Image (tube, rainbow over all chains, first blue to last red; front, top):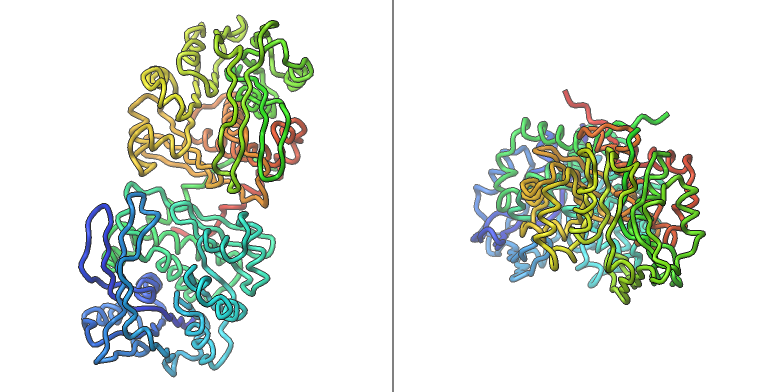
Amino acid sequence: MSKLVIVGTVAFDAIETPFGKTDKILGGAATFIGLAASHFNIDAAAVSIVGGDFPQKYLDLLSKKNIDISGIEIVKEGKTFFWSGKYHNDMNTRDTLVTELNTLADFKPVVPENYRNAEIVMLGNLHPIVQSSILDQMTKKPRLVILDTMNFWMDSALEDLHNVMKRVDVITINDEEARQLTGEYSLVVAARKIHTMGPKYVVIKKGEHGAFLFHEDQVFYAPALPLEAVFDPTGAGDTFAGGFAGYIAKTGITSFENMKNAVIYGSTLASFCVEKFGTERMENLKSLEVHNRLLQFRDLTKFDIKLP
Amino acid sequence: MSKLVIVGTVAFDAIETPFGKTDKILGGAATFIGLAASHFNIDAAAVSIVGGDFPQKYLDLLSKKNIDISGIEIVKEGKTFFWSGKYHNDMNTRDTLVTELNTLADFKPVVPENYRNAEIVMLGNLHPIVQSSILDQMTKKPRLVILDTMNFWMDSALEDLHNVMKRVDVITINDEEARQLTGEYSLVVAARKIHTMGPKYVVIKKGEHGAFLFHEDQVFYAPALPLEAVFDPTGAGDTFAGGFAGYIAKTGITSFENMKNAVIYGSTLASFCVEKFGTERMENLKSLEVHNRLLQFRDLTKFDIKLP
């Protein structure tokens, strides 16, 4: 088992979907990553920042899930990062209604002393300079660094993004972002270009259409489970990343073969995340439920053509 | 081995993609279906109509591929159905530039006498009344009837479409069409509604995102092979259907398990079809190439999580 460091937002979200709307609820990349990774009972720490308005019960929730929260700075006089968004009817697109950076604007993450030797580092979506600063604090080179990012940083901090990309092993990115980053429509070609930017492993997330894992000339594909209803997609990408990182940390194996399994775990956990608003489904997820859904995933693509 | 009857257009296409454009070349649903099905060396007949302008060499091509063409009516004084389209840069959308029905406007298909007892019937995309008329001519109930259709008939002949749907076992339809036909966004729910309209098996094609096969509460998913470049998507859906029907005819087994393999064969053959303009790639496709790509398909989704 390896130690896992997770950096990302711990935040308030207010979400509107065709199924309803929420007040401010628990959200943030590090929250979703942590909840997903906690499924593996690993030694993980979240590095983040919140304001004095952040309820203790949310921090307790993470602690109870065995996530070390000593790296979550609490700025008593500050306010917690707040995001509000509204999903369109197809659930694939959304409008951001509110983004209040608050304490996040001056976030200088500090990795707790006893996690600076962590083997696995999961850099959740944040400014690339903040992501880089985590790597600067590691006392030994991690075995695997995973980077999540988004188009916002391609538009506003492309050079910084390229700098942090050179330092990571795995990048998780969605299909449109992969196209934007490379100018290539074919995801095969886009992945090859992203390889040359640094990451030896490229995960391209296609939402309801599943995810690709590219490595050199190899490719693996995990479908998304076909669901009757997607209730709230918020956090699905982070949950995928958390499942991926958590599985790698649990097994301690960073081979391409093992990453396939990590992608399947990520997809499986993400398929639960979207079933309820915010973190609700992930907070109460049972091992048996995960196990049963893994069986569904296995059967989904299984066929038996006799090939010599 | 079962006999296979294929009905559909045999046509001229003129295609423009970001990679180039063609003059009038061989096209049509029955052509692509036939070329794909011919891979299985089965006893298949194409039922269609062409004009006096249709080159003998194209008919010879089908004959050489072991497709019985006695059911292709040649109207000497008429002209062959002609379609012209232009694909957008993403290759997922296209504009129809020209549709000249010509002889197709009065197509009254006649199934050759010795194919009226065929076990497998593939109804390529045509007016639903024409599709129904094929079933009326069968002297015994086929073991499996497969229907392909498109949104055009939902807009213009919905009642006729519902009538033929009641008589078929399998429908192949794309995701947007499944949503249009049912008013449901979730493909799981859409498939369930389509079941109630007749077909016990529902194939939902998602283009570059693969295909689902639904049957009762079961679901199978075949990814599309990630390609470096899609050269010309024309005929990919028909090739998929032809591979599906051809494999079922070859094996003579109509179980859900065997249909999974049929979907994989359909996806595999379609992945070749798009690599060149029109029928070019399918005309010269070798068994070994198909075999090797099947291996790629198998590896694409294979993972090894130990599950008790």
